[in-house]
Length: 184
Ligand SMILES: Cc1cc2nc3c(=O)[nH]c(=O)nc-3n(C[C@H](O)[C@H](O)[C@H](O)COP(=O)(O)OP(=O)(O)OC[C@H]3O[C@@H](n4cnc5c(N)ncnc54)[C@H](O)[C@@H]3O)c2cc1C
Image (cartoon, rainbow, N blue to C red; front, side):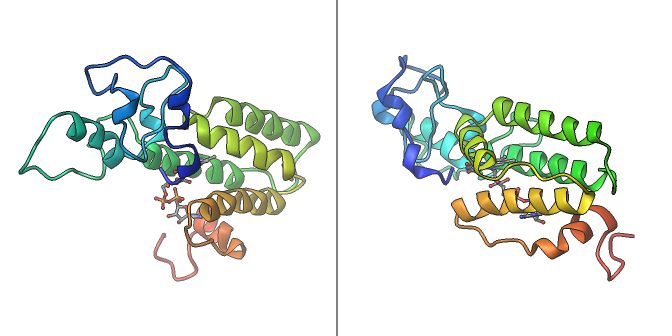
């Protein structure tokens, strides 16, 4: 979880029980672990490595290495959830009509409003809602909507210190496939 400013910040608030991984005491929470609104470590707000480090901090495992990605049949961490979500969001822009009706436009605005409220990583959701307040959804055409989504994703990339994506290439990445034919 790269949004360090709120790492463990929640721990000053809600009640935290003790004992198991899910109930790790707040004073022992390793850096990077974000608490959920229930005061317990939030899996979908935290990277798998950081989530696992709660257990390591409670129980000593001298000769084991910590895997950095969750097994495929485990609940997603913040990164797996993010990759899947961006795939859905960009794919929605890719299948959006080139010339959308007023209803199409209204539907995506409603969808993104709810998406921003329901996104399971609550710190991500709050920042995304803030970003959308300052950058209203633009969806008068597929091209405009695809660019808007690319800018939204770049907003998160910047926050996380990741490289920005070249938005002139959003359609090749998410709709048509690359010009070299490797997606065909
Ligand atoms: C709404 C939202 C908010 C999030 N907020 C946070 C947060 O606050 N903190 C946090 O730790 N994680 C957050 N995430 C998750 C984060 O954005 C990444 O998904 C996660 O870190 C995994 O990153 P990744 O490097 O595997 O690639 P991702 O960023 O998931 O990108 C997946 C693929 O999309 C393509 N891509 C990258 N950038 C763009 C772009 N601008 N336009 C089009 N395509 C692009 C690339 O091919 C890339 O491989 C958020 C995710 C979402 C959906």
